[in-house]
Length: 114
Length: 113
Image 1 (cartoon, one colour):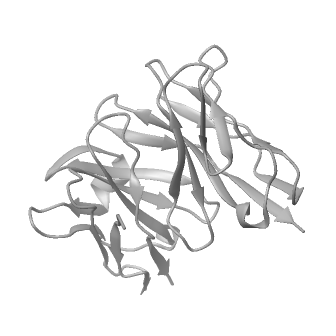
Image 2 (cartoon, helix red, strand yellow):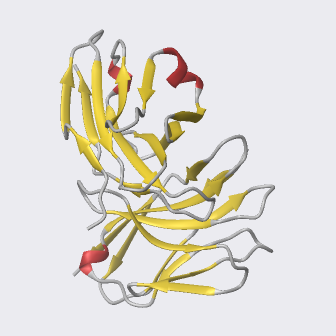
């Protein structure tokens, strides 16, 4: 079965701590997305990559969030200094390149910031 | 920028009844629309996709027709089952300034016996 693998499934951090999560995209998919799904189930786009290059990212991502997709290694999303408002489900997705390609999602990493 | 609107936050139905979940979108480009379904504690999964005007697309009993004239892509099913209880998201492919998929706020469908 095609799959995007995200680890860990659950992450608990204190305020101010770093939080790092990883994603292995589906084999052959050059485009990787990170979304934040909040407690109201709304999706917020954070950043995306094509291979190792950032395609687009939001301001929030630029300031406290860092992400990378190195060659031959899992992609990662790291929050430098966690805040309570960062508690959410972080979803990674991958796709082929093309605007008609539907992203394939992983099960997510649920971050709780205490 | 591009946007997707889902007007119903929660839809509750009895098993066997038909359902329509609303989705409208706004874009200045040629639209490509998706419907995703997310069951509890699972990954969102693609249900349907379309970019063809006025053509019905179907999968697993669900169907939708993209109407560019009204900027709509409503999801329908003629007879819902208990297993259809889930979150449903309409999404729009956006290639402007990079590439991302814009999601609506989602509709929770609850099917009762």
